[in-house]
Length: 258
Image 1 (cartoon, helix red, strand yellow):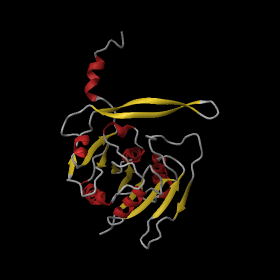
Image 2: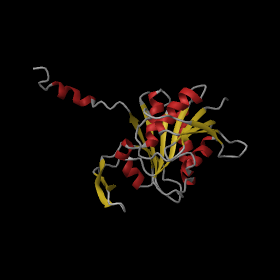
Image 3: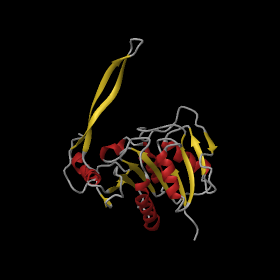
Image 4: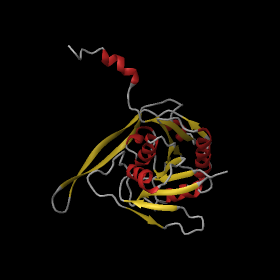
């Protein structure tokens, strides 16, 4: 049977350990092509490069016999997917996987995520896509306990497909053992209680450093945050149609044309 073509990308950069772990897992499933940022792009959301030049080059990082074809890109995660689909690949990939991110993209974090923006960009083009994140921000994070779940989710997505207009946001708990299992969840209601730490540079200029605390506002046991807190991998089907369809009639009742 012909192996599926898998586009792999991320937001932590092409040398990130999480990406290397994802590549190793995907090589067991299909033919892998990597297009990833040449430097970290965390928190970029769905930014794209429109007022600067964009560069890409073939790189060799993995020197094993089954090493995938890899390209670095000077742009954002969304740029990487756009460039891969328009210029680098000569056929449509069967699936796009992004990650494994160093740090959580659960709950409201999905809004800011470069990892998920890459998956969403692929989804916009009608390609099944999944963003993977491990709830450990360390560069030395241990990814080995994540890979069984990652391979299972990708294999099932290839078998069953992912509905158009939807991508999967997968978060994996930080653990020293295999996760308790996999739960399909909804996105927990939460936000960041943020503040700016104002500081002064040696030259006397004021600057600001964003800080904050994650505030979980949702006690439901069907959420991604609950699943992660209880040792499960969370899978949230995520749509990129941001229309609040249930509010349309309410807004139509406003006196907008009087």
